Image (cartoon, rainbow, N blue to C red; front, side):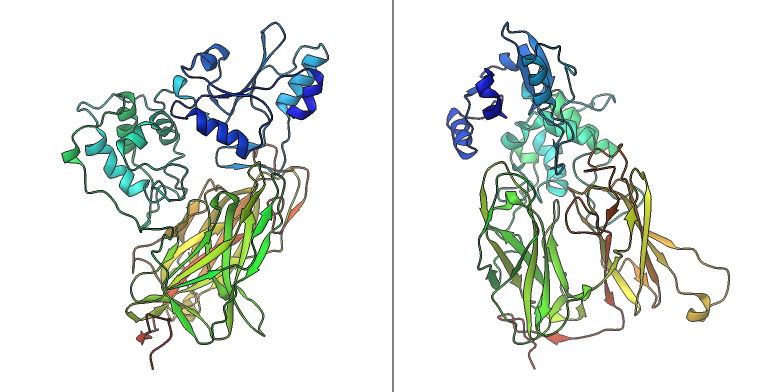
Length: 527
């Protein structure tokens, strides 16, 4: 845009408002992204205050007399946590065209979806009375961070900044207060009436505690009252140092912007014998460009089916680590393949994928299995606000539930998992009909936060013949701010302009007792 308007006498200037950003870092960012206009630092916040901007990225347009003519978003493509494939309105461009044509700017101000600028940041959300006792970082905030935040917010984790120390956390205090008050963080999308072993949500009292701490100026408190620090595996692997690392042969080159078709990679390793794994992780060399990545195995000479799925890397997710006694089987004669969904960052990027596996250290008693409850036979009409799609699969055995995972695209609105017990005749029982058990409801599905929902071991048991039904609704209306095109009829497809309806149900067979001993060096069964 700057290149287009430069010959017409428009001067662009980038203003950095980060209080902790150094001049050298700002300059390096300009080099990395090829910024063709000046970058300056708003050292004391006076520039942002004078212009009335409150968030990043927010733009202000001044005319030749220094009068403010437009303030707001550049366009509506990007938002917190994700982006539309294309903007539906170029607000900055339209404002400049009006101004250069001598017209009044038609839309003088637009809302901005972004991070609060510290100069204007205030603790938000709660109107409840402040805590009677001072809330301090070491005594009250660290325990919450350890349970709900540090899994991602640690050095080398998937989040953009760590929250391990008082300095790291207090520097983000205002934004933390906002996203906690808005319930955007910690990310958790299951209905509040349903409980899972990996639940992240804060209680109302815990939310007030965080907001009170920020309001009070983020006091550190007594370090002696802090719990022992949480530790994470050294190095780059979340699962710890893998027993087997497979690296893709190809390094992918990505454009600065636009859509990138799904990329597919077959890793250079043939499993000559049946191999059992207890942990698996996909690791990009450049995590910023990988939105999600699916991993599965392919048996040479056989067709791929949904049972070949191993695991995936998704926003807000964690690597696959199975409890002792559980493992996943890769059959002899298999290779591992990846399906990669890339996103662009504004500059050309490169990425090379790696996969890490860990082998079981003890006896393998159960094989992790799953049902993919899915359908591709749907067509979402233009403008439909809650188009329903259903699919179901039947459990082939008495089973113990492990967890669930939902996947849709930008029009995904909600998803519910139901368990219908076997019919009375099949089960040999009598009595009134038993209704379905609601296992999981995601009332406000978020494409940018795809999480798994795990039960505590042994919590959920299902009889053979139980039908697992997944009901999804899709919002193809103009009221969906993430909708790429409300005029389109939407069908199944791989890109975010298409849709998908996948419900994963993970379980183990109650009648299975493998008692396999495997070699920790290669995952093979010891005969």
